[in-house]
Amino acid sequence: MPSLGTTRRAPERLRRALASLGRNVGQPIKLTELAADIGGQGQRPADETVHAYLDALDRLKLTDDSPSWRPHMRTRTQLREAPTRYFVDPSLGTAALGVGSTDLLADLNAAGFHFEALAVRDLRIYAQPLGGTLSTWREVRGRKEVDAIVETPNSWAAFEVKLTGNERVIDEAARRLIDFAAEIDTRRHGAPSALVVITATGGAGKRADGVHVVPITALGP
Image 1 (cartoon, helix red, strand yellow):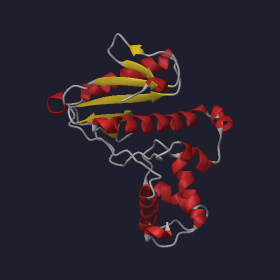
Image 2 (tube, rainbow, N blue to C red; image 1 turned 180 degrees about the vertical axis):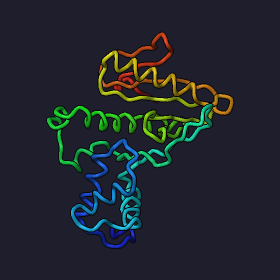
Image 3 (tube, rainbow, N blue to C red; image 1 turned 120 degrees about the horizontal axis):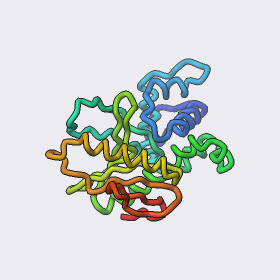
Image 4 (tube, helix red, strand yellow; image 1 turned 45 degrees about the vertical axis):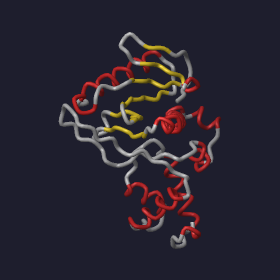
């Protein structure tokens, strides 16, 4: 970090910043929450200090946040503007927290967020040869969200990521994708080229409602 020309930072605060990002991977954590985690039991750092940490991690190619997608909507749904936090390599989040596979198996909710980070990393890489970009859509109150929107010069697709292959969970994810697509003003954005639920296990296929179910091992450009 000093080699970037930034001011000198306390290593312990940097470790807390990394751990906070690891705990909140896949979430639009606010700067105030991040600052509280970095400060620990001591004084909360100033906003410019938090910005400096995030800027340094970005310049070191350790983080790769997803900006908020703000499409034209058919409704007056208010959308979040904060980016969704991700590491470039999803293993950095678990390393920052000092957790391994045993810990993740004991907390499947947390494991789901880290699996989402893995899927988003793969989508980002596979979209690049197509000239695509990746973003996240979230309603301001957090009641509606889509994990990833991939846009190419001529089309867009929406993705929900689920750790489980449970049919009820997939059904709910598919319904949310369909409801989301119905809110988009397709006169301006066009219809989605695909609505996809990414899973960790199970088979791949297209459902009767048109939503694709794809295990992460079957993803590709």
